Image (tube, rainbow, N blue to C red):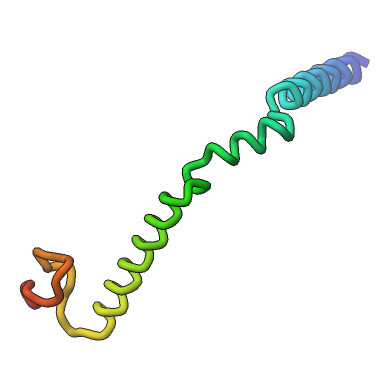
Length: 89
């Protein structure tokens, strides 16, 4: 009988903890308007930031394509904006 009593107490405590956790989650979750406001403030929504990120991706892709097309070890380059000029491995 004592074991059943302990099991019920443990179950009640776990249920209460889950209830408190769920209630806190509901309280701190932002509403729909607040979510939209947060999304508008994200840096990725800024057109200049998006253009800069796209340009960076283009440069990285061009560097990878150039590295794939040459036998030169591009990691040894001193000036990344100019092709060649670095040491060869």
